[in-house]
Length: 327
Image 1: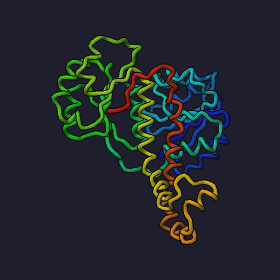
Image 2: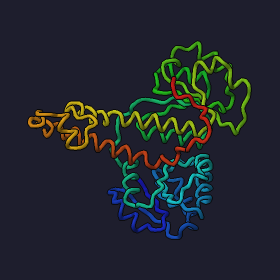
Image 3: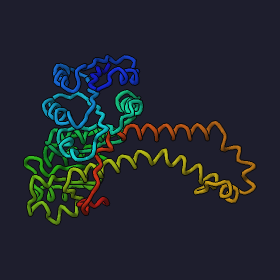
Image 4: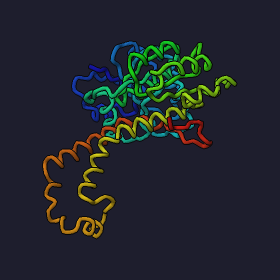
């Protein structure tokens, strides 16, 4: 059972929209000043904070998350006024799920899809080397949203040992990890066959400074290097989303190709694409065909509802990106 703490300007409306059986719901009535009340719940197990953010209380919410970062409570935030100017401090505080709409019904569907839907099988693992707790937790939440397990390594040797036991879907290495040496990493990784079996991405926050040895040629051959946390999130969300939508989208593509109607929209286009065979397309209306299309549609809707609260993490790139996506 999950305990839900509501801290919104309209707790009654949101509680009615949730309708979760088995969930204990408690409201913080004085908003936004009453956010400090959450501290008495934050240490409890299986707690979800549903919080409404505006430009008057956003700094208080960031401080709340930073202060309680050592607790493992979940959060889901509604921030209709979000304009991107606070994206970086929100990311640094470890914030993850923020919907930028005032549509309570849609926000409730997204929350339900994330925290109360049936768990899906794990699609693989991500091996992550880092010691930056808030951002590390954020990356972990994003990966698990798309049904990927996360295994943490604290050193190059530990990362290699993990890779020898299991080939992950992706390696992520934080170059700002304490004790990380790019030259040592390049040497040990070059000698490890297991590290070469999956895409390897090294990332660094340029605000922490750049050094000449960060760009040694051997490491550039082994991996793709990203010099911005924002670009890393852009790439990861793109990879996860495209991977997640590929399978259900293929069902629709295969249906149109089977009916020889790819690209046809108007009656005229459909008529000339299908010709006389249009009189004999009863198989389009079979239970099997409609069932497959309906299931694919449900999967796409579920994916959209799960990724909507992450879309705020995607930042527009005004300069040439440091990321070369290919591997």
